[in-house]
Length: 161
Image (cartoon, rainbow, N blue to C red; front, side):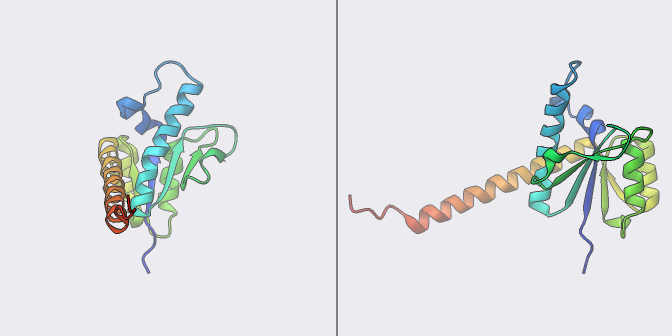
């Protein structure tokens, strides 16, 4: 049986690459909202393609932390511990994966891309990730429209009015 594929997203790298997500200069709530929108966008990939998805952000605290708010969304959000970067966490996760070839990393960071590739993983740019999210979103929209048409066709208007 094939190992499930895993998508790792370099959180802030992608967040700043996607113009529509950039939180601007105001920190705090704007960053949290931008992180939530990023997680929601990549969740469509998980929903459509069945990939495990982990978004890794740079540090929060002295230990690795998981954002409890993402549980139930099917996307894991990790915060690198102090002294480590999201890049180094992702590189470690790919290198230690049972099958690094099943790992894809979304980042624009050239050194990270090189390290991931050397471990056997593959990389996509933030622009390619955005296009991938959009393709998955369109697939969900089309599938919902088809189901709606099928439901309307099977039920029809059978009321004797």
